[in-house]
Length: 380
Ligand SMILES: [Zn+2]
Picture 1 (cartoon, helix red, strand yellow):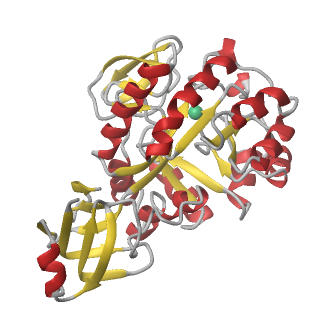
Picture 2 (cartoon, rainbow, N blue to C red; picture 1 turned 60 degrees about the vertical axis):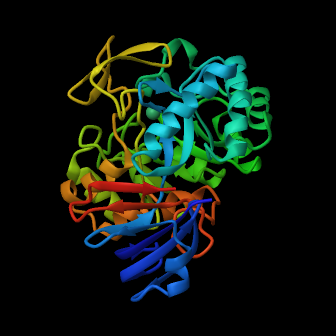
């Protein structure tokens, strides 16, 4: 057991702001919090006191979409899958993400089943918050960095198979709803209590709306890997931004989206429906070089990841601490809106009422950011 007292910070709980706030964390769980003088009993209970003067004390971050980091990626089978997943989770944890959904790129269904089964242990241990299947039910026309040879239409039996594997480990499934069986796959995903996401899609606005009617609640990296906005053909982007039922993922790394696009989308969706995600690949928290995304070769130069073959953007090298800083300093979002997009919004979508805030009993730990929003420390 380790008990840490964070004192004299600006504690942003997700519901309120405590100036000269304090927070008592017991093994990453909020035991108590308040404003002004710290009760002597709490000070006495602490193994360590952290002076947070000048810092924001915010909830541990929640990333709905992440493929890798620290030189490794989610995927594989057996012990190797566990080892890789631990490396990725530890890398992002060091950057403030304490709730992480493991995204898997398109693979054969039989292999995905094995990966999901292997990762179930880490979901049980709380290292991961679940698995995101990004593929193989994606549009070949908007495949991004997914291997086109692996993309297939969703067969009901495969959808049931993967969602039924290890009971509830799959939390998010990205689906192109215009594929044959696409809307049914959305329905089946929602029926399992998982989050159906619309992405890597060639859908028009009507089809996107139909997918939301069928139960989809998330837009996978809005704008990226879908038709652009046209004033007579608003496409999935406008349909999803306009729909109050949908949370939109934005990759705020300064590469995937222009800062004005981030600002416009975040304002359009509002702070209750915007989620910043990393979509990170193996080079996140690591160096430029040559990496794999699934089996495809990716070159990372100056922090930008592109397929060696064709040059498509192939994930980001983002971590959520930098996403928050970019959203505020680069795109001009209000700090509390940027924080909501990495805490309360994704936590609520995942149904994790214990995460994404700092009220008593919250389990996601805390992150200290300095005045420039650079990460100082992760307490979890
Ligand atoms: Zn993607």
